[in-house]
Length: 142
Image (cartoon, rainbow, N blue to C red; front, side, top):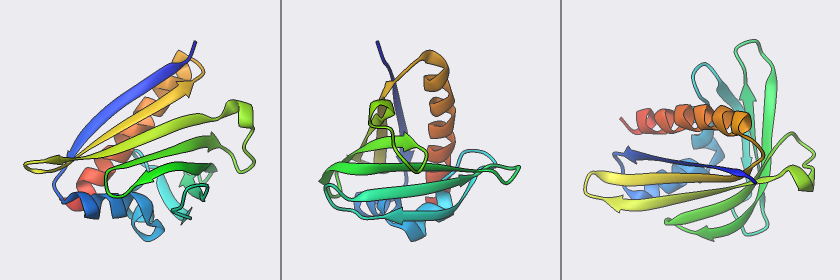
């Protein structure tokens, strides 16, 4: 049995700009990170099979690295990618993220689905993180 997160936010910007903010390192480092977590470094190879890396700096200075591989890219509509905590992914511990960028009268509705989470505590931890990141993305465009 695995757990899944579904979250959505309205971003007041056109889909191509929101998609770009999600997929270009120079943008990610400006909005990514829940609460007091910041993103000092990001790398993106936006191609099917391409890898990404996002470094989360915790308030105490600890760096938690998120890595993965892009599985599907439909610019500017949808992304699907693997998600691993750590720099050396254990193929058995990976989860999957799908991000949809939907047209909305007031901008773009971003829908995040994070699946294959192993248990409820992990799901809840990631849900808090995604809520903070999505709030950061909304604020980036406000």
